[in-house]
Image (cartoon, rainbow, N blue to C red):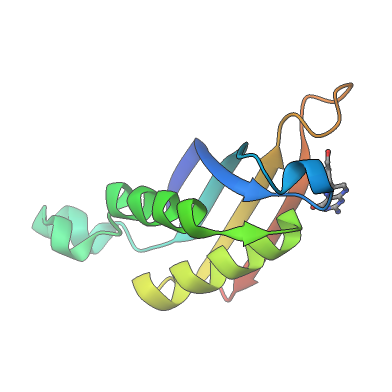
Length: 117
Ligand SMILES: Nc1nc2c(c(=O)[nH]1)N=C([C@H](O)[C@@H](O)CO)CN2
């Protein structure tokens, strides 16, 4: 299966369950893999047939800018749904890391897979 991916995309968003988290913005780090045929855009050498990773990244930044979720689970689910619907992605794996949440850990978060390969 071919994939288009974005690795280590950092976004600022309002996220967290505690009162002190509702008044600040925090960084999330996103790793995204999307099933997408690479042969067709490669044979035509045309961006219009490719899954445009720059457009994906811009949409993710806009989503994070408006989001106000409590849980990283909710952030991941809603973002995955939006990207699949808007870009026609049949399958994706999305990992959302909240780097500062547990100081003794390099990162904590969730990873989800949605759709069919
Ligand atoms: N499974 C989760 N556990 C926790 C979350 C979360 O979003 N999903 N969030 C918090 C707090 O917001 C924490 O990140 C503050 O440091 C705790 N556990």
